[in-house]
Length: 193
Image 1: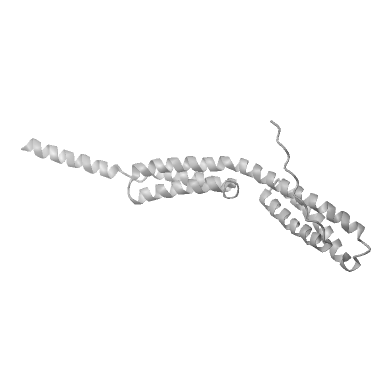
Image 2: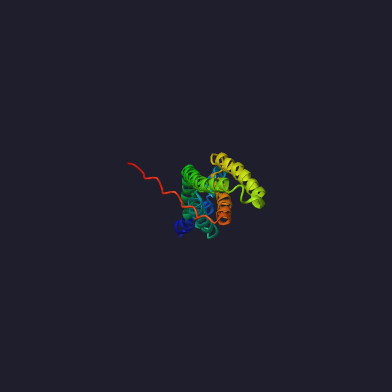
């Protein structure tokens, strides 16, 4: 009987020990949080948004596991979230390159569509005296904004592309004013293997 009590008491103590040892995975949670902050600081919110959103969902799942006191599952989910945030941070450079390529293409397209408008305006300069001041102001602003957009590509490609879209509106305004055929987008360059 004494042995039975000792065994039961020992089993109860061991059970309490294991229950008391189950703790939230704080180190993994902090590591996932730090990885998320690093990814955002690297620009994942702009240049790798899909990857960042996927990582956030994994972290939210880990947070839910902690709430439900499923610490083992939460630990693994935080490890997975950290890896996903690191993947998002790594995708930033590729996203920046794509954004820069898109911005350069938009700038090139708007610049090419401006050339015939500018040439037509030079031919009609004497005929549209009433609109000459507006034309000159827009032409000057266009040149300055085009240069600014080109300069922005290296530091903020998304803003450069937005600036190119603004310039496109100026081109369209003068195409309509001069009753020109709408500018055609340049054909994409063929890739060589």
